[in-house]
Length: 290
Image 1 (cartoon, helix red, strand yellow):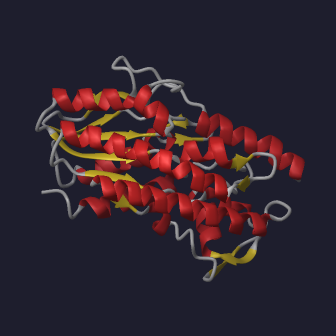
Image 2 (image 1 turned 90 degrees about the vertical axis):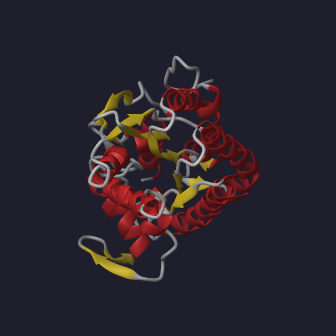
Image 3 (image 1 turned 120 degrees about the vertical axis):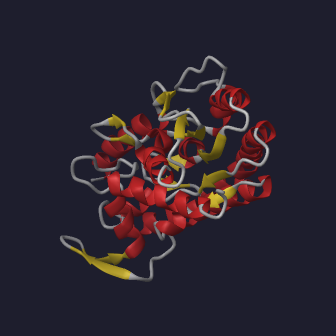
């Protein structure tokens, strides 16, 4: 099982979350009276195993907000595999932007559409975590590594938010915390219960660092981690074929592909998971939109 975990899960995560391709939406969608601008990684791009890039939470959120703002267009400059560094500099980004980087592309769009952007969403940082702090042979996330990573990551997140806010003052910016797909290790690999608990503690430090950086920079935070109840090992549910397991494990398996037999180890949300992320953003936006 350890060999299968290393070969299958590691390959899946590296290929789908740390690699990437062409940005999913370097075109405008919908009417052009006002826009929703989205930045991010594979979650904003909407990656799903076996399908590639789909509408994801960005498309779901756009459709939800269009019920309030019918003339809302969408500009999605996200890139599967983006890190906070590559988002800023464009260096080692899986995607090409004529403006230079994903952040440059977003700022250029804001400059060309002054007064026409209703809100901005961001998700970035998880690829920083996985590329630096994940031991791929064991599935263990190094908490000390996360603590060491956070100051640099927080500086880059602040830079991203500041650049957007400077070009579009007063426009709501909403960023997100991340769900923890590695909770799915519970009961699926040898030592999985221990791994799930240890990884979750490191993941909680990561999410707290994101929330602090975004909040200090003036962005609102959609607490996706809370939606997925990643801290809740206490409440349990009965899952067919697995018996009684913690609710955070059950939700990680129910709303992502991580525990699926076909795509075991893939961390991306399924259609339900993307809708849950979109609804979390929607709830945060309701107090910010006119």
